[in-house]
Amino acid sequence: MTGTRSIALVTGANRGIGEAVAAGLAGRGMTVFAGARDARRGAAAVERLRAAGGDVHGIALDVTDAGTVAAAAEEVAARCGRLDVLVNNAGILGDERQIAGAGGGDVLAEVRRVFEANVFGVIVVTEAMLPLLLRSPAGRVVNLSGRGGSLTAMAAPDGNLAGLPPLLGYPPSKAALNAVTLQYAKRLREHGILVNAVCPGLTATEGNGFAGDRTPEQGAAIAVRMATLGPDGPTGTFVDEQGLLPW
Image 1 (spheres, rainbow, N blue to C red):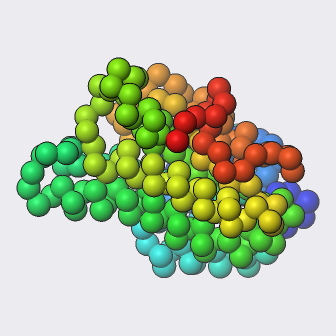
Image 2 (cartoon, helix red, strand yellow):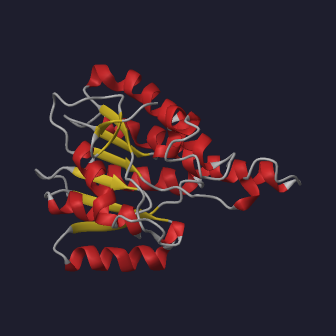
């Protein structure tokens, strides 16, 4: 399956932004592994992506299950021998139990659940795929963050995020993901692998009850752009479609 096509893996590609990223990369001629923890929904997404002409293959991958991550890495290695693009899209918002001051024993449990998917899951997947990325002549890693991960934006008392509830899980998890992004950028710079975090904007997805004002395709655009950077592209940045975002 190697050939001349670039090989990409997108986590959480069975719906929303993840599926749109997979479509965007496939539309640029890449062979795409669409990761999904739900086999039925993953298969349905792959069917849609193939119907649109994409060279897309489903792969079982739950970022909170190290066994499925290891198996996915082995499958990509066996079928392709390398990985050129990794898009860490899978993540969760969490629920109201993560609100600061909510009380009760569920607060920490919910924060841990959010971090397990949004931070630890990214580390587990990236570590598993790193040997394959190091075989690429031009590896790219894109981590889906969000404006809530900007400490500068969250600290502004009159800013766009001022009206959000004080969540102990989701925004801190995205701030931590930004820090993780910088560490991988530092580690992989000498190998020519570019690692960046992106903000898709407020996108209407099933995960947020379709509350956003952007389509999944619009939200995916910046991830696709950073996944297809040339050799002189940036690394260790946090960006949206308009440019650099504050940490």
